[in-house]
Amino acid sequence: MISAFVATLLFALSSVSAKRSVELVGSSHANLIRMALATVFLALMSHTLGFGLGGPSLGWFIASGLIGFGLCDTAIFLALPRLGAQLTSLMVQCIAAPMAAIFEWSWLGTPLTREQIVAGVVILGGVGVALMPGRSAGAGIKADWIGLGLGFIAAAGQAGGAVLSRHGQLLSRLSGMHLDGISVAYQRILSGLLFTLLWWFWSQRSRIGAPPPGEIRWRAATPWILLNALSGPSLGVASYQWALQVQPTGIVVAITALTPLVVIPLAFWIDGERPTRRSLIGGLLGVGGAIWLVLQRAP
Image 1 (cartoon, one colour):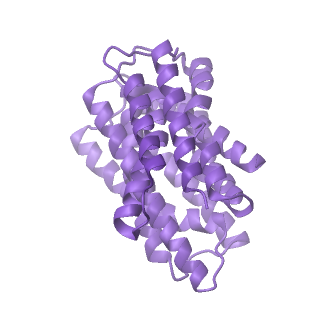
Image 2 (cartoon, helix red, strand yellow):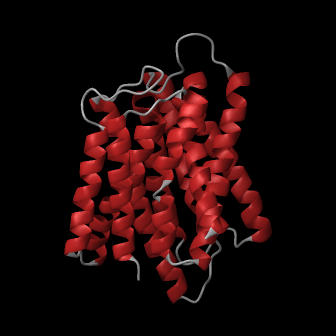
């Protein structure tokens, strides 16, 4: 149980530190460097303490990482300067839950109960309240349509990556192979790093995700990039996978669904994002609906 709460705190730190690094060096630079650092860390851990590469589900984990680490994280980094850490985390963590249920139903045939559908409506209603026109946060952040679109893309990427990863782990168990969480994260992040690298090359031409006007502040950004790399795709994912090994999936996901609420005090303390009453109410509804949904899906 402690590992699930640690993962929640680390995911919240990752969201806030990612926004700060984007402000200093731009989304394309910040995302590529943190992905490269996380890949090196996971490679060292996996090849020394874990399984490394290989296994019957390698292809599924690569596909999962391409969508979950690559598409999802790129959209998150582009959404952060438009929505802020609070709203970005709320959209991704909460909307991904009903999307994952829909993906799993349409692909694997897992049925949706009436309670799950109601929970999905509550989630969307809560997120809708928090994102209503006129909502603004500290540091001049105000939600716009591009930011909202990026948030939905990120949520879809996280949901799709999670379903593919779950399918891969199921195939591994059926083949009698037990993969540790670090090795699963390592296999997934490789394709995510490739996606991020290709996006970086393209963004240098298009100037999408370019650094903010003025000089790039590498020295100021370095601790935030390091914190983001360690707290999100490295230690955060490791804690999450550790939690899944000792606790039921529904309990773990319900706890990590609290991430948007943990982000609120961290974003206010670190980045000056002051939440409004409407965003707090919407966040509580969205997180509550996400917890209800995953508990309904728990075995």
